Length: 110
Image (cartoon, rainbow, N blue to C red):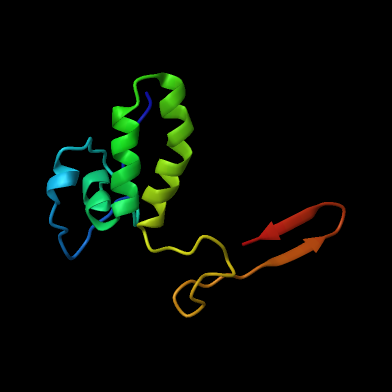
């Protein structure tokens, strides 16, 4: 007999609430994860994201939506406040330790 304990340790909680703008309220919503807020909340914080989401919603073909999708996801991720690269991060808030050793095979630790 198999015992399965399903859990989801990856969750998000914000201590503040974001008022949904009138523009964002008319747009589709999707649940965010980690430091990324739900789509309408994020669109309320980012006029760029709200504009891209409107373009995506108004696009009438699959091809048109595909051309917008990467920009849309990037703009949504940008609302997290996280650095896009290790060079941009705040070293006091986000640490990074890199080490490597090779003896017959390589082992990388992050």
